[in-house]
Length: 423
Ligand code: AMP
Ligand code: MG
Image 1 (cartoon, rainbow, N blue to C red):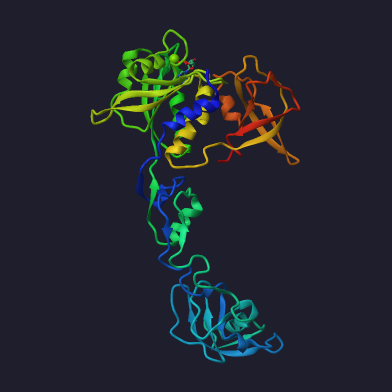
Image 2: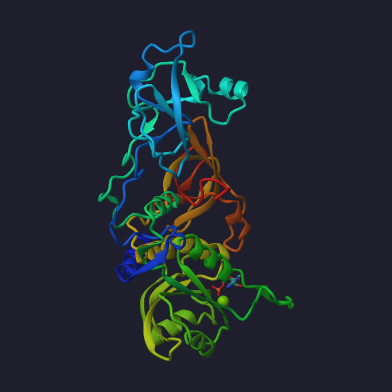
């Protein structure tokens, strides 16, 4: 039996970063940028107003006060999206809206609140007053957003390797980019095995259970940025499994079930016969019987090729835990990501966990923060078939293989699955 680290190393060594592709920016969330993005424009393109008000020459506002307003002649009005053809000359002002380019001659904007704009418009009934009283002095370059203050023309705005989040998508849009070059998303084929399994849209005959693993795995693939391809259910025979290995193309094949030591656990047998086993069994709990290797598959076009196969256990909790530990980093590596680990925090454990057989335990726990300190308590029974324990959990408490257990009050490491229930 190998350690979690050894298993992960063997998996990662056989995963390559995938090719680059040009995609619409909204399809790229979570993908890694495969180009340096340069700006071909300045943002903002022109000096523009940060306020609704009057564009003035600041010297024309000297010693202005509400008692002694400086009255300027209003020569134009300019809205965001248009450019005034007038020039602000001494003694004049242009009414200006937020985002509108600063007219020639002006060096500052006086906000409406510092003028008598409201009173004048009310008393005259005019949309555009012919004169405006400035009630407060403004310094030069007040209330102006300068051209290029966000992005200068020709600069590198986002560099290759950046993971695209909503803010980067917004920045790309601000540059007028509708597509961008990114590392492609891995396609992950998912094959469930088990004579007992029934599809979720079928009636449930006695003795059978619904195939939940394909869906928890597909949802995890989606969450971490891959493209899931659910292949269906293979029964517990070598021939059915072999048939399941045909007719699809993918970057990784994940099977669930059939990797234990039972009479019908055929996945590892087929992997041994038809491909190459890299490892089988990891010193962890849940999830010991995880297998990894390469199998021969036949693609959609009838071309046969070897494909990495990650054989996850059948138990629904083991599936999700081993996915987080092994499939997730594999997917992230293929996507070109550098940070492959989940956040690990320290918490005070509030329950007892016994480690009877020197495996690394990943116990489902609810993590809470109280007074700046994290506390973790178990979700309840820890059977690897109790999938609702995963639904309750926000983290996995790690008990190292060389520890006999933990007691309430001990400090433990917790691998966080979610920081909150909302994401
Ligand atoms: P196995 O490793 O194939 O012996 O499966 C271990 C346990 O997980 C058995 O109780 C199976 O019924 C259950 N199991 C296997 N595959 C699935 C699946 N796709 N969905 C739900 N439970 C499963
Ligand atoms: Mg089975």
